[in-house]
Length: 314
Image (tube, rainbow, N blue to C red):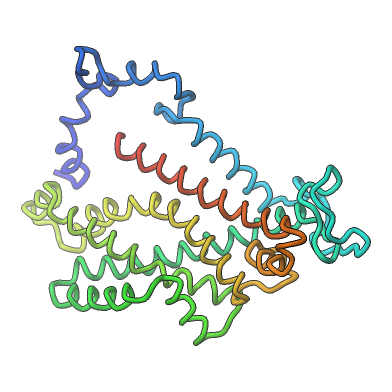
């Protein structure tokens, strides 16, 4: 019997159940796909599952962000660093949608061109946090009680510091800058990922298909590679999607404090930092970069929850 047959045999009963049959409802009806399809608040199909208006709006905004990140000239053809002192502190208008800053630079152009650097920091920090968390969680869950105890004590020490404070401590040691801020945010998020991955790994280790592989004489390394890791690391997609929004907020906070990207860089946190001096006279300088930070975080969270629900009910 092959390794794939071990897992396929255990999942066979669930696979034989009709996907659209649903469950009996309280009034004798069905709560399956037919019942859900009558909900007027839902529309559209996503790989056979239903999505709502929030997911559609979040996906549309993320699509705009991706276009702005990879081809900013398509959404904002201007130069984000071009100054025009005569146009300084102009409010939002048809000419300058988001107004202008103290040097006459178009805020919409700067926000659009800053999407790439902000997303790059958020995604890179999330990948660093997931990578460190996966290593720590796997080591803790696989190498015995002594190693598990040691890694858990290390994680508890890291949890003793608030995430942003841990990032600030790292920057104090290695100095400010975009690269340092990115790694600091990744390091600060790693303990949470490690705890989740360790718990998932321990759950998979006690599952029936792992026990079947052990009874059949499969080696520990083969069980780890073929059975445990694929089923443990699968939730990383959801974790990463949910973590990008948090990482972007933390990176923007560090830039706001002057510890990340520095003005006049077209980066959302740096723009927030530059606009705080003019909050009483030119609030749009901080409002629109902050709005994009918030909307990006919300959109990433909404899409992450949608992916999580889809995987849970698949």
